[in-house]
Image 1: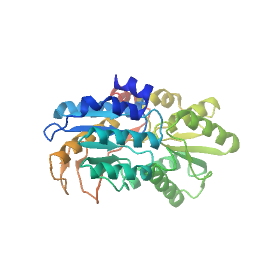
Image 2: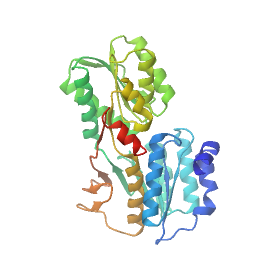
Image 3: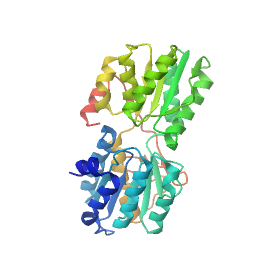
Length: 330
């Protein structure tokens, strides 16, 4: 039901539609609203499943708001509506960290706990959690692409947008790793902010392949980037010539992997991320301490760095693993 409303009305209207249902919050049964980048795509569908699963386990109210496009303004509207509902906890996967700072500040001033994911430099939060460290994730991709290309050739980098801090941090780490370890590889342009839009990623990949006949690799940080780029490789019959790597939903990308146009990559489990939003939210509302050595379901033993909880729980995406991961609903 909520998903259909999301697609029809947009993020702000969804939150308003839920006001009556979710306004009754209490410390014993906190209300948690999680605003993601965009609704209706497999990655965030899996996150929503995790949110619902953990909420049922803990006996709390938790729901996801998925904007109709990856527009920071829609996230601001959704958060404003959650503030008006007086929820206990707001979780966010930001499209633009800086744009969200003022509204997150207002949320905290209203006594609402704030948790982010994929935004380790966010300021107005209680906690940000990551299932992959920036260096670990970027290095893994840089190494894998370097090995796939034999250390030579041109490559391009896609990110969700030029304002998504984590995507750009991964890109920085991967590019730095390649420069240090594979000097025979050359980056085409800087980076392209298209990887949360499958059609934009496909078009950009097609344009790059036409403009750069020696393009041999695309690193796409953003769940729709690898899908769109792989489709472009298939259209251009460039299987084996252009390697596409990036995090993607296994269910969405499995055929492209088996077709040989999507090389694979690494990801974390978005369903687990959804569960962690709820787990941390309940801990915050109940005043449970989060300190060095705390064992948190979904994260494991944590070692807080400021307000960041960062672990490396990477899942390998390849032809041998993608089907089993897809069967898990990812």
